[in-house]
Image (cartoon, rainbow, N blue to C red; front, side, top):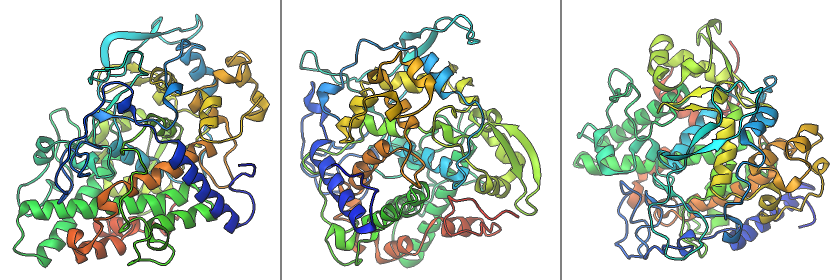
Amino acid sequence: MTQEWHHGGLPGQLRRLARLRDTLREHNLHDTHGAGGERPRRPGPPPAHRSYDGSGYDTRDADMGAAHTRFDRNVPLDLTFRGPGLMDPSPREVSNRLLARTAFQPATTLNVLAAAWIHFQVHDWFSHGRNTHDEPLEVPVAGDDPWPSRPMRVRRTRPDPAAHTVPGAPPTFENTVTHWWDGSQIYGSDEARCRALRTGEDGLMTVLDGRLPADGLGLDLTGFSDNYWVGLSLLHTLFVKEHNAVCRMLRRAYPSWGDERLFQTARLVNAALMAKIHTVEWTPALLDNRAVRLGMRINWRGLVGRPFRSEVLGGIPGSPTDHHGVPYSITEEFVTCYRMHPLIPDDWKIRSHVTGEVVAETDFTPLQGYGTRAVVDEHGWSDLFHTFGVTHPGAITLHNHPDALRNLRGMFGEHLDLGTVDVLRDRERGVPRYTAFRQALHKPPIHDFTDLSDDPELKEVYEGDIHKIDAMVGMYAEQPPPGFAFSDTAFRLFVLMASRRLKSDPFFSSLYTPEVYTPEGLRWIARSGMADVLRRHHPELDPGVRNLFTPWRPL
């Protein structure tokens, strides 16, 4: 492709985006289960509702997308071998010199609710599980570095428990949550966890005095609570309440239904509403481009609207399911593109939702981990939601990684620099370096550091070798297309995987029907957006904007 997709008029942009998506579907879906340890395909019955562990969505391959199955890849498998330069250059040096926040660079078209939302969503899509204590990786630390230990020890990613049967296969890793867009962050990825979150009556989930109950560690009891913070608590609680609101609506419409049917149908509706919000609200807020806005609307609603079963005319929901020749799963490269820690500010001003006045100031550290519930107790939902609505996140760029996350005491006892960890994880998991990464996604090659950035430190850190640039660092260094909050390279994977998460899921494609969701459930989804959800549960709030991921009207 000689012309950038975002150049020229709207019709040309849409045509080029469609061609790009088709190219990516053809060349950038790679099944790791043939890379050693082939996963047997076992048939299963048609699904009646979302399963607890993500299995049973495909009648020919019942384990596709289930929890504890492998991540796939978006680049050819021969590019995913772990290279010899795991510490070249030191990930800590990359963090110190290229990622560390020198001054806060805000993303002024967004609010922190947008940052919390994407963290909320990625916890639905992927987790590599608890890192192993065995043989930690040793990261070189310079003599004048204030880090307290030498070397810095970072726990390795939990190894794939499935045996490789082919010698010399590239590394593979297991997703410990379901791969589907099914709300597993609030419902869990196994039946025992899910049932622990429910009342057992009328399909309802447990809410006590307006909030989620505490687990044994003092966090919210929810489907997935790793790396928890106030932003996650707000959204987990909000969408558990939304689940219960859907249950009550269904109970009125179908008084003979029991607990399980009410629960499962409400889960379908709630998960679809979250997917819709992400597609037609969050995405256009971060990618403020007319072609992208129209493309996301087409993805969800189509050009004409239902009842057409064409993906283009009627939207993906209700169209035939299609995996495009490769079993569905989340990919390692997709994980890489969602390393967006610069979104988190270091300095916070908690504001009154009534007056807009600052009622407290804090850094990020008290807002996360085991301090989360205390902050909610102190400030309340209304002030916190308002604060998130009027506060800018950080821009996703170099020199803007939050200080708090580069000196973090993790929930499981680790002292972490997440800048170092982000770089190291991609290398450990065989994600190609930036130049190979972008070319695999059909972007033209770069030949010099100045083709990417005029930052002299980039060349110094990577010792003049552009092929050493890490994928995440390169994407941070890119000049994004106009209106974009992140790079065009990351966007290409978004083009592929955003559609795939819908098109491969029968509950977003062939089973998106009144018979499965109920007419009332589909109407709830069609008539609701993020503002409606917030208004249902917090009528005292008045954001004053149509898109709640953009800055709210100040008081």
